[in-house]
Length: 150
Image 1 (cartoon, helix red, strand yellow):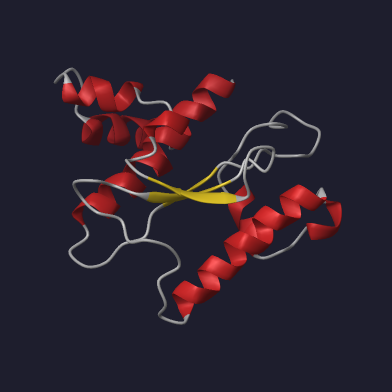
Image 2 (cartoon, rainbow, N blue to C red):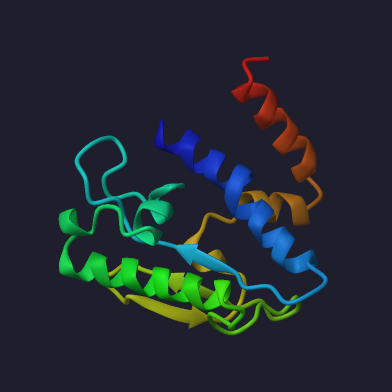
């Protein structure tokens, strides 16, 4: 089940965000949220979609470790800077990449890293695209049909 959700995250969130950042005509700021889910359940220890929203809006800070709270505060401060028209971190560059990585708090609260972040994500789909084995748009459409029950 975790493999299916990892695939879903990659095709529905990670890869579209990367390609939007690469093709955006103006300034873009790209990030990865890598803080693991601290709560018991299927996804404990996984960094899942929408967990970043709970951290961004400070919704569960009283239930987080001190280290995880630091990630939440850093994420919120960066988004507030962006909302005020300030650069929240270094701009993403199409050829060089560059992204802000939030967490995991066991390593660092946040850090700007060069490249496209593949070292902290699965890159199988990107490799298959580069090898000409898959068309990511077709994979994305197939996933959408699967989610729609078709």
